[in-house]
Image: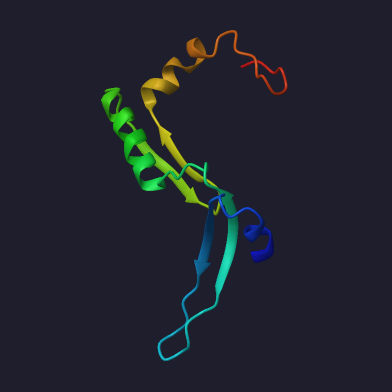
Length: 105
């Protein structure tokens, strides 16, 4: 990897890494490189994204509740349910066709 990076010293990269934790009195855990990304990779903080999305939901004025969430290495999932949107769903989805498989509904 170092040899490849030396070939183009003007290019910049971001190394995404993870270091686990060992128990008390244990030596530091080894680090693991998870990704080598170009310098044009845009960093987005999950917490900031979540707060912005929840603020938009709040500004809609519809009462909502978070019914599920999960965070993986690659994605953040948050399920928000709204009774008002569920009631309007048939009208909102009228004539909708999935761009993936053409199903309607």
